[in-house]
Image (tube, rainbow, N blue to C red; front, side, top):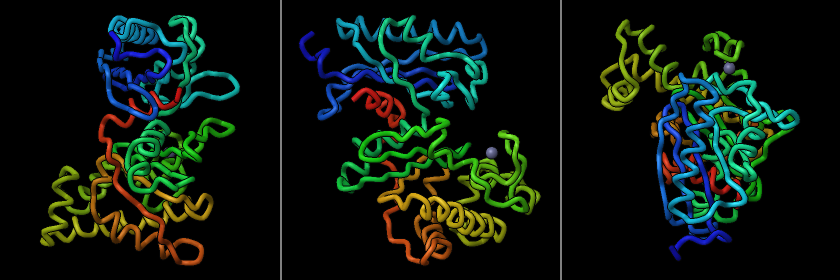
Length: 309
Ligand SMILES: [Zn+2]
């Protein structure tokens, strides 16, 4: 099939907790999707099963494209320790401690470039999403995922910054407040994630109203203005979000900040949240754009493909 081109196509795979998705993009310059396929992860069936699922997905992609590429990008839910090549911090915990990049290179017979899914999100929004379309001059981009967890990725001059320990951009586990936060799965108390993530907001609302509600309902009650606890939940979110983000701005001063995830949809972040950044940042002037992403759920798999661009 002539639309596929082994010299130009980018192959990417997003390894998620429930599904594994693969895409073949036409080229880095023309990121049109030529092929897309999903298989279940089956994480409960163990590490060897996940490797088998990846192998099967790559076989499907190869059958469609008519060739096997030299390199493949994979986004993962955790981090690859740079000097050992072992996985860590994966919520699909069967992956932790496994030499996944080496195992996949051997299994698939190609070079495998792996990165954390928040890094893939930041890379995709930079190379073909909101940054490319609205802020093409940006050099330093900080991509945040604010959802059921809190993650982040740092892209400088179009490339992911991994960091010495592989955790560059892992904003979710910065310390924010012990009194406001709860114990975090990472072993510490008061991380951004334990205060700003969707489940943390729902916990706060339930604890102060005595009524458990989903985040969407809390937000719409705050917008309607007739639920004082919902309003307080949003005030607290925007205030603490600004404090948390100002710590990043003081170190990196990104040209653009992109916020993905369910909590990232809350408009208060872009108004009161940004005002709170100004209050807490070094000279109380904060004018950098803070924007919503454009690529939706596809950012992870597109970013994985751009790992080999
Ligand atoms: Zn933590």
